[in-house]
Length: 395
Image 1: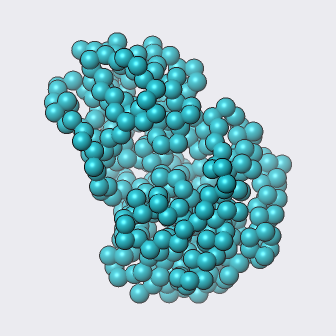
Image 2 (image 1 turned 120 degrees about the vertical axis):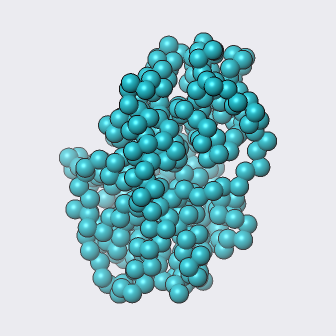
């Protein structure tokens, strides 16, 4: 049996896919531990999870929705990923020294995991919970790529004694891609990039959701902007609420409003701070979201088409994939009023548009790929290999 350490950032959408993989490994008798934000990991992986706590930077992690293109990438790395790696490094190193894993599974946004594992000569695998890095967004931007390489090398010097040469986002030992070709498209991938589909597992729910409210022949729409977009979402949520209120008699809607930014809504709109999303998806006809990979994959898993309004980070890439696959309609997050939102919802609900058919096709590919079970199989295969056995993760 093996020992597997999962290194994860303090982001729900990045921890959730690892939970299913870790559970599959544990079910086969392997030992599993985590390096990450202890409270969040225990909430998602279970109170009995073995967690080595990693702190976040003082003052929290900065996020912004106002920047685009290279400026957004610069902000992401300089104000989010690099400070996070510096803060997590001591906890990651302590976890490795104490737990002595055979394999380290490091999320792409927990850069400290790959850097420290490589510096110690360990076998390590990248967990790519979103497709942003799988498609190499810096291809054709050599100056930006060189700038980022410099940032990573400086970080390597600070937290890994300058040892190692691999890109911490793309392990030469293997990359777990939690998607499939049906959504990703025909982009070139490395020899050891394993597309396992999303790892979706049942999540306990303490919600008192009023399920009887959904007992209607009308199509039901969910609006959600995830857990990290509260600062940017007020205007869009209000526009969506107005759009859906005007569609009374044609649709019913659930809007998740954890920050309490909505006022009065139509009788056909139910506003909740939280809801059991996986259970809810079984009864939905469309989802309006920020194009976070977690929400997108869970929706498509259930064959639910999407209206995607990306805000930042990898979300525009994911939104483009949804549209290219025919499973949804894209809106501009900051420039979509009630009329545009209503028209987009009508479009994805229209059977003639083929959006549900495409969503069902992608969902079938997800289930066939194996998710956490398939990921666990690839990780088990590494136990028989020598740490020095490394191939090209990028093609």
